[in-house]
Image 1 (cartoon, helix red, strand yellow):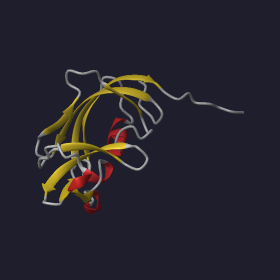
Image 2: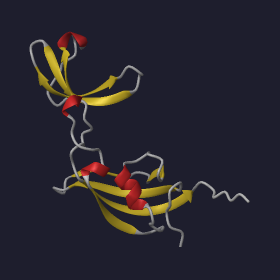
Image 3: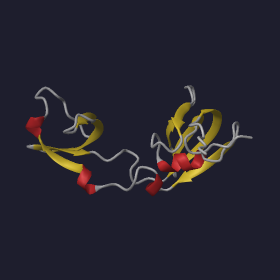
Image 4: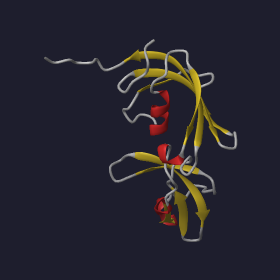
Length: 151
């Protein structure tokens, strides 16, 4: 049987949980997740977890924080002047916002505190600092990069 290797395009069903058992994401009821193994499209621990699997195989992988979204970074918690937000915006603690960096790349932040003259936002990934557990099933190896042999 063909085993998944770096460069293969695969389709997997998954159920992602925290160590507490709380589900944070699942492909249940959706199409399987399709990605190229080793391309950086998914976190390192997920890439490593599917490598070597065969079609139809199911397994549980435990991904430590270092191979997931990394540790929380206090430098990603930023106080912004309140006048940088639209006047009519009703800010609330816990509210997710989409921000853009200087290159135009968008990313999600969360409002963590509202003060008189500033708003504290957290730009850490919501799963930063957490070990993750995935139940995965390899549905299909769609294709991969052809092996090129030169004389």
